[in-house]
Length: 208
Image (cartoon, rainbow, N blue to C red; front, side, top):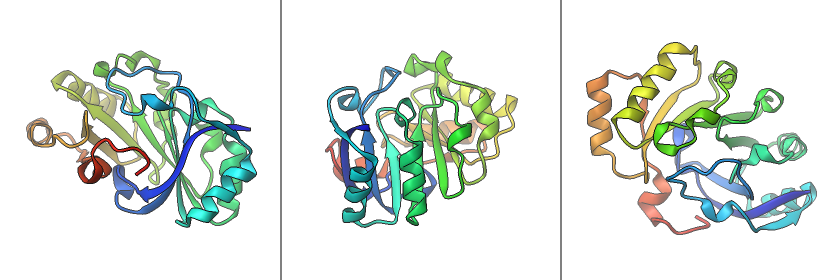
């Protein structure tokens, strides 16, 4: 049984798969309380659904790509759902905050979008550094950046760990890009600066 906040169809708004039609399965609950969290509504509530019910809902909505997000999906037992979705021919993205071990979920047909928390979040000490070495080229490492201190931490993380996946930075709020682009250019960081496309289109509206 899974606790589900919402299931909806949209386009992927973040990272290297930005713009791809996607069905989102947002699970309820998170072990972190980031200062700038934009999905705090998923901390509580939702409804209990079986794996079969979730798969049926995903099938009705259509897109081949499925993003399991939260909240924090790894706080629940998602492996049976992931296996069912991959077995049905779906491409699965698991969005996670980096504070849970990833080894068991690194399956063929699954890509990880790991949101590594920086000092501005207030949760940077909760990250599991061993996850960084597990990321594959098909995965992505995302940093939500509020200021120069955060960007210096991005540099430190990338310099002191063997990260094989693409590294992405986006500003807190997702759309104020100019200062971050200038800061990245000045720093020489080998990262991609990306917005949150869904916020560019729909603002803070839910279910899109």
